[in-house]
Length: 292
Image 1 (tube, rainbow, N blue to C red):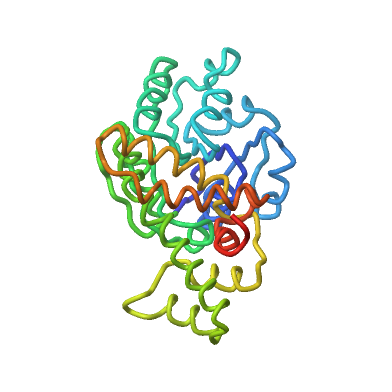
Image 2: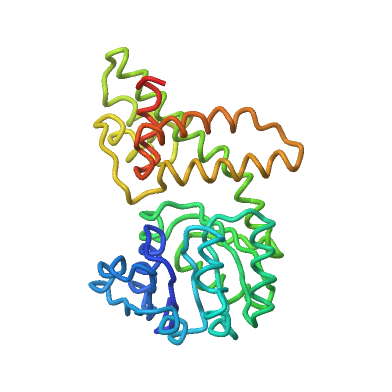
């Protein structure tokens, strides 16, 4: 439990918000910063302190969770000429998706600026974080393992230490195909049931609970797909397109076949072209039946 431990969360998107709420509920003192400060306003009611600028955020604690979009956002927020001196002596934990090469380069840049960077692959959706479940794959400097393991134990259900920086990103690349494919699998089932006029309650019952066909996330994805109604608080179609491209590049660099990845990417790109880029990734269901 937090016992008043002070933590800074940079980034107030879906995951950053969920982490903030979870930590506050467990007794942590959390300061949040987002470049668009208004995006933090909803976190005030949970007890978060809102920093108006990056200097104010980093002055609150040396323990910082980076919930930014990608490596470029990390660079521009923390490693610009006017911010590098602010990160000296801080320990950072990155949850943004990066390739192994990107996170290793970032780690070197942080070290050169007098800070340390670790990384975690959170195998969880925001609602899982709120409930304290999900696997956390952690990598980084050995001297920070205990600190981040303790914090991640409060955020998720199990922490897996995989060693040096870059290894969590390598694990993430390996997990991307099943993650992307499971949503496609749910979408195909819903689309097929719709086209055949079969009982609409059956896909959710089977895909959510059957011991053979159980797919994580089906209980929320199936109703959204059946109603053709998608939110914007989950991993988006645009996020999926970007992440799949990263995974494909990573696989090709290692001589692995990418045919299945590329077929899945085509479907997500189709959904993005239909104007669904900012919608929850369950909206990929629309790409299976609209004109392609």
